[in-house]
Amino acid sequence: MTEHPAPTCATLAAAHAGRYDRRLIIAIGASTGGTEAIRDVLMHLPAGLPPIVITQHMPPGFTRSFADRLNKYSAVHVKEAEHEERLLAGWAYVAPGHAHLAVRHALFGYSAVLSEDEPVNRHRPSVEVLFLSVAKMAGQAAVSVMLTGMGKDGARAMVTLREAGGYNLAQDQATSVVFGMPREAIAMGAVHEVVALPQIAQRILVAVEARQRLLAP
Image (cartoon, rainbow, N blue to C red; front, side, top):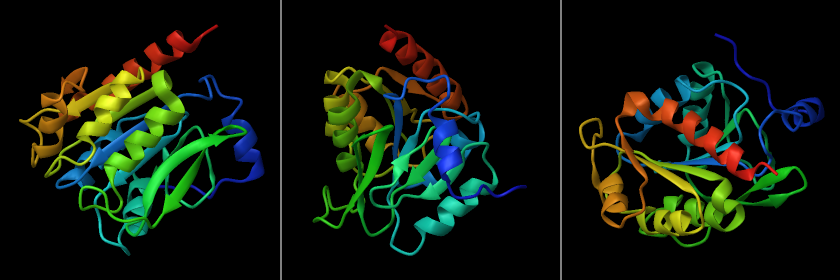
C-alpha cells in the first residue's frame, strides 16, 4: 500500500482544477468507537472528493499516527491538520489531539485553523467547534456526519449546520459502539438521515452530488 506525500504547489493547483465546487466541504465528528468507524468510511470513499475535516476525541500524541494509519488504507489522502494550511480536494484532515480544528475561507476554498482554547463540552478537540465553523463558513455547501461517540459534543452545532442549509448524516444505533452523540443530534432535529455504518460513505457521495447541483449557477 502506497503512502501519500504531503501536498505541493502542483497538487494544490490540481486539487482546485477538480470537478467539485470549491465551496463544498465534508465534516466528520466522532468519539468512542470512532477510530474504526472513520476508517470504514474513508476506506469506501473515492479520491478527489471535496476536503474532509475530522474531529475524533483522542489524546495528544496519538492523532498523527492515527492519520498516518488511515492514509495507508484510503484512496483519500489523510494527514494531521496544521494551522493555516489550505484544505485540498482529495484530502482528509484530522484534528490534533491538543487543539480545536476549525475552518475559514481562503483563496482556494478553505484553510485550517487550530487553537488551544478552553475545552468545549469537556473536549479539545471538540466536534462543536468544528461543526460551528463549517456552518458559518460553508452553510449549504457542507455535508456533515456524526459518528459513534459518548456524550453530546457537536449535537447542538449540527442544528446550526442544518439551519445554515447543510446536509447532516448520523450513524445508526445498531452499528454505533456508543450511540450518545448521534442520538443527541437526532433528538435535536439536526439530522436528515440516520444511516448504518456500511452505507455512510455511499450516502456522503449522494449528499455531495446533491450539494454540487444546488450550488451550480
